[in-house]
Structures are given as C-alpha cells and as structure tokens.
Image (cartoon, rainbow, N blue to C red; front, side, top):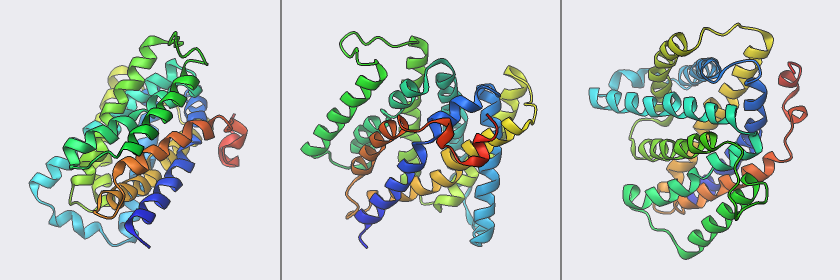
Amino acid sequence: MTNSTKALLYGLATVGIWSTVASAFKISLRHLDPIQLLLCACTVSLLVLGSIIIVQGKITALRHLSARQYLFAAGMGVLNPFLYYIILFKAYDLLPAQEAQPLNYTWAITLSILSVPLLGQKLRFKEVVAILISYAGVLIISTHGQILSLNFSNPMGVTLALTSTIIWALYWIGNTKSIIDPIVGLFLNFSTALPLIFIATLIYSQMPTLTLEAIAGGAYVGLFEMGITFVLWLTAMKYAAKPDGGGTARIANLIFLSPFLSLETSARQIPHFYSLTI
C-alpha cells in the first residue's frame, strides 16, 4: 500500500468521524459552556492518549526527548487544544451548527496554502480548482443560499470560526514537521493545554457539574473530535507529506465532505450512549 493510499484512507476515516461532531457540539453546549466543555473533552482525550502510549510501550520515549522538543510540544499545545477550541466552541455557541462547521472547515484552504511556504509543497491546478469548488459549496451552506449578500446569522461567530482556521492549520503543519512520535506529541500537547484550560475555567467560568449529560458530552467530543481522531488525522498528514504521499492539499480537501455529511447527521444519529442524554 502506497503512502498516498494510506494518507487517503486515514483521511477518509477522520472525515467520517468528524462529520458527527457538529451535532455533538450543539447538544453538549446545552449543558456546558464552551470552556467547561473543553475542560471535560480535553481530560478525556488526555486519558485516551495516555492509555494508547502505555499500551504501545511508548511511555519510555518521554525520557528521550530534548528540552527543545518538550518546548515545541508545549507551544503546539497552547495553540491546540487550548486556544483553538476555546475560540471554536464559542463560535459554535453563537452560530447554528450547519453554519459554524462549514466556516470552520475552511481551514482546509488555509492548510493547503500555508503548506506551500511552510512544507515546501506545490499546489497543482486541479487542487486549486477543487479548493474553489469546495469553498463555494461551503459559502452556499453558510449563507443559507444567499451567497451574494453574505448574510451570516452572527458576525462575531463567523469571525471566531474563521480565526480558528488559522490556528488549526498552523498546528497541524507544525506537528507534521515534528520528529516526535505522533501519539507522544499529541499527549504532550494535551498535557500542556489541560492546566491552562483548568485555570481559564476557574477565571472565566466555573467547574462543571458532572451530570450524565456533561460526562457523555465531554466523552463524545474528547473521543471523536479530539483523541482518537487526532491520531488518525496526524497519521494521514504525515503519510501525505512524504514524497509519494500526494501532498497535504489532497487530503485537506477531503474535509469538505464533512459539512455535507453533517447535514444528514442529527442527534438521533449519534451513538446510543450519547443520545440517551438528550
């Protein structure tokens, strides 16, 4: 199996999972504010990533990292999940899910463009065309068909969603260039972010009440938006960045399938353990 095929398969698996999270965000935000949801989800993700490291016997790799590598991983953790998800969850709090998700997924365009100077990749003509077509579809959904008027329901929410795309693209490009084991790197990212999220929760919110709804929401987002899916997507990115991987723009365009898949995703379609809480 070529690196290009591996990148495509991992990318498709990620998109399929991410297509369910827009509904999960909106449902979870009925019971938690954005920072509380991030705290719960990040905690679950850290536990999942830590468990994977232990099972795979990679815990010893933490002892062999240099101070520079620890500092790099910490910086990436500040970008994501700390800053990125605080901004993203607030955008979802202000916008309808069917509008917030397509706007957020314009990070694929940002990722494709920034991969040229930062990863030394090239955009082929057909990739540029694919980006433009995909973005047109996103605009149609986000503006409720009023594409010429650009009539969004909440300008601040739109601004936050678009800002999140820059942070997200920089994070994945940075981790693609990193020589740290992908899962170990993600574990360090979340280890850095969790204390910051905890402090932000104490300052700007309050500790969440651990109801069944809160636990289920945090678990679903932590598992399928962050933990497991981050591992899949970073693996896809690393395969795509290899000489025969087809380039990151190719798998980045896959993400535009997710908004359309999400149109068919309702709360009833989220796995039964989560839908019991609504």
